[in-house]
Image (cartoon, rainbow, N blue to C red; front, side, top):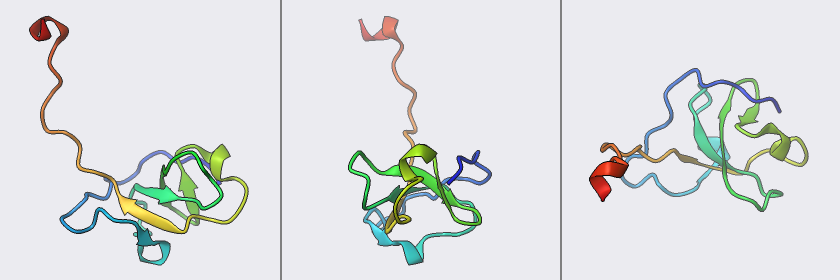
Length: 88
């Protein structure tokens, strides 16, 4: 599997969808999602489908079966972090 640059917006988590879903239900339009490979014990990887599943860190997914589950990416924070000066 090869690393691909984002070409579409990430899938946005909607109410009730922040659970692992079967890979058969994942978007196959280049949308970035979290993927779970059963043979990897590190952590879920961001990835997308474009002529096959591609993850953000391709060396993790080069061997073994493809992902079995997926989940939308969480919605990013809407506030900016406090500056170091303001935190003191």
